[in-house]
Length: 628
Ligand SMILES: O=C(O)c1ccc(O)c(O)c1
Ligand SMILES: [Mg+2]
Image 1 (tube, rainbow, N blue to C red):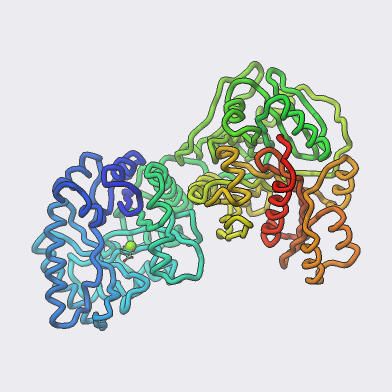
Image 2 (image 1 turned 60 degrees about the horizontal axis):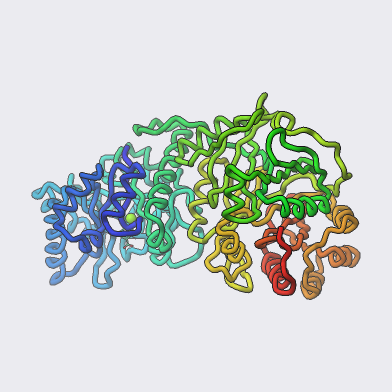
């Protein structure tokens, strides 16, 4: 089983595309006619070029609107396709994709369409080429794989088969089980793409918003599982029409494609499928138990400001690193580390971004297994010279070049705090913060799918659909990744402009990633009181917000008064409630959040996000933000 990708999925000219596709490890390509038309050389030279890159040309596409044409136009359609047979032979490939017609002049009738394909099959046989018929989900008469299969079945010609495309099957809501009825030797090719679950014209969705398997909301693995039952053993090919990818970095998009295919095949294998494919052995998607630590890079002066702020949040200065200028702050199960080294990774992160979260420690069952899976999926491993007494903690590169350390409760890594830090006596009684509820990362919008894929292929995470959150300066595209038990939660915000609060943070910090850290408490009012006593300054929320919340009539007057008093926001779903308050922004727009979940509330207060953002922006306008 080979991996393939349509040239339309990658930006650049043909050479740039082939370079990226070949370097990413694909075996073959589907070549799009546009890439031949715009190439300075003959189709034969295109074929030779692909060979030089070690890539087979698995098919040529697209031919549209061939079948069902009335007399007078029918011959023209056949002549047009015959010309493409010449092209196929020059390219050195034998498979032509014909997608189902949406031509208003075309006629229907399964037998008419089958007769067209039987006749074309004869012509194809004479030229030693094959025809693959694909149902486009908006085709006039043929809009599902079952329609296309009926045409192919009745055409009954060895040179005519079906092409399955996950988009057309899944986005249109067709059932995948029926694929199992198609004999594998009649499936000539399989195309894969994911898509977001949004109500939209299918043709528009298909041509602008497809994504790599694992980036959207479609169940690609079930589709593949059904395909495998046919006995199909040809290439798995990505056909991704996506506006962002068209303008994206060819290397990153091609690498994402490989990662998505490897993860999809691994998921199939975990369903007990025997795959004839050179797939690296790898552990299962890694279960996340939570965030073990968050590390900031800072200089000495800013470390004092940050440390002071952590004190007002109720953190104790709990430890000093045995050999480095690194301090540990603790409360409940939360570990915050401030690194003021003058060399090494944290220092370079500080020089690049200013005070920032440079490193996040993730708690997993087995850190070595997590590293092995990350590596098999093409993540960049991270390491740097260790100081005396420092443990060898597996790590990978994450968003914005940041680092993710992988920790577990095993014999060695489970003792990292005792091994690397001298323990100091707790100097505060705390404010009731118990754990890290979630992290929020900001990134360019065009990176949102890449990082979705990174996290959701390595780790065992559910992903919410992408929602758009209004900011006074633009739209933020937001989604959450979370473990099914909620132990690990991450929100990702993709921004297009620096006029949004998240966009400004990204621009001013030169691509730093973590913009806020949310701490959980079991009693938001007790925590809010303790913080107020410590001199913590909460983000002031608009008076009118409370008028609106009150009008909804979900909270009693006494609770409303306390929300207002402490600048706490509130949201609820049918599972429970969510209280949230914020610190003022620091540095380039970083902030802390404090939340309490009641019942089984599963969200992140999205309805409040526009008001929180406006409140942060108001403050950023009104005062000069203290540097962190
Ligand atoms: O949008 C289209 O016309 C089109 C063409 C060829 C394909 O393989 C496809 O899935 C869609
Ligand atoms: Mg297709």
